Image (cartoon, rainbow, N blue to C red; front, side, top):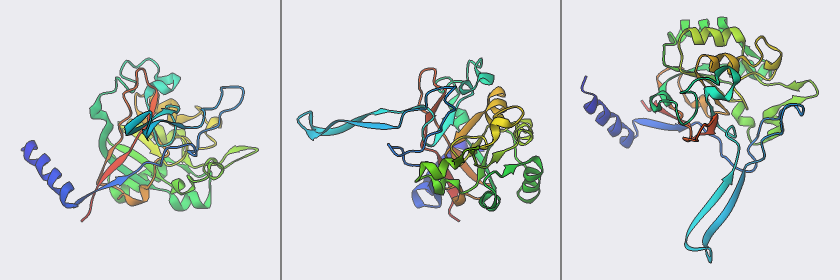
Length: 263
């Protein structure tokens, strides 16, 4: 295969619109929903702050720029293996050491939007994944797997996005068995449209928070607060999810993109 020719064809199809770029990221700003931690564990991530340095004024008459204050896991973001204790010892497990090749790959989109609308605590199981594969084809090594729930449509309200009450958050996600099954297929990583990669009730699972604990133990990656997965086909799109190259970074806000055929 002439890869140079292939890349030229892809570039041409991007320019012609035959390949469409889908934005999978939420706007990042002071109103971005952020996860809430139990008070006995840690102080919550501060709200995103955008501070003006200059804007065509006495501080910079010809230019505008800002400085930012934000947590690594704010908004649509990437979870590196070192984000979790189970992945802390991987030398290539931080945002500045992960091979760049790993940020791009085919994506499998498992549509659970109807189930999540009917049950906010819906859990994706191994049987659900196998049924999806029987219909759409096998999930292969090196591919991303993401769970479409249309939860991103709640992103404009932190209360609706977190969907918590006195018993805790109520958001859909995977079972531990589902995550282990996907790891056995050697996937690149797992993504969700909710505030984190786990279900709201994941703290009570075994192990707790399996999408974090098991994925990062296997040196795999997580994507959270994705948007617009309803614009992707079940198979056939390419996902690009590159974090900032933060020194010893455990994660990073990202501009996640998907390449989709317009045919």
